[in-house]
Length: 328
Image (cartoon, rainbow, N blue to C red; front, side):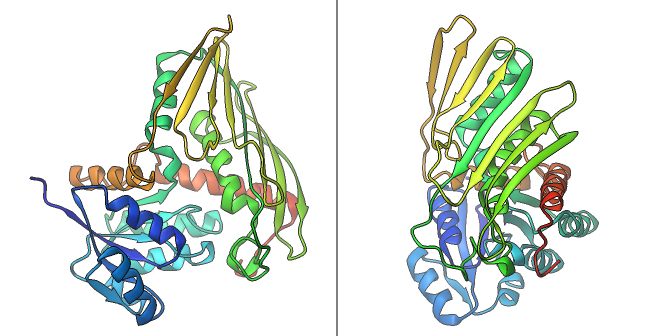
């Protein structure tokens, strides 16, 4: 039997719990530690997920000798600091998306990981479920022909509009772009690479962050990505990828891809149901462990260079808006 890879989770909030649930369905993974900002919250998380090592600080988790890889599950503004803490302690790291606040931070994270020869990956979990694997397979097989356009949106209306919460607080790098706009922007990157032209518009909310925005990318060869993110409305949350031979629809919610529909130019269709096993976070964790066992330090599916390019694109979008966060 393959020796289990031992996980530590840095943070104890909603996303941390999602990764812990994902790990629970992987027989070759073991959650051994959690690090939080207090002993009370670390103990509560440890009780919930049966993690034996409960640390009252992030530093203690990073230095836990029983941990092989750390999942960084803190707010956006802390991703660089927490990732560097773990890398400098010799730990492999999976860091929740967005990788950091800006490209400069991401480049520093990548530099340290490569200098120390440690594994590092951005936790863009939507890249790894069977539905997205099928999308890449169909494209590689030529089922769509030459790719010409992407239409994608991700919007939802929070139950409460908390100005101090991560969605709306500029001090936490809030706003629709970094939190949910990254899903369509990352998908555009997966399909077409970095755009050569960006046109965007936005709505600045009361707290100063982008509550709604639209993005139009032009890619080499004339392909287009048309995207939208919103914290003001529940949008369709669908994706349509169109090529010269057919189009592919990722059914809602596109960020949890569990079915795709191929429609050919003659309007004949084929649906591929690909339900999750687990909550979906298990797929990115499985990819991390596969790569670590093979000795690789980064993913081909979500490479470090692509993570840098995605953040450069989001920097360019915010530059058009004139939106900078307090920590920049």
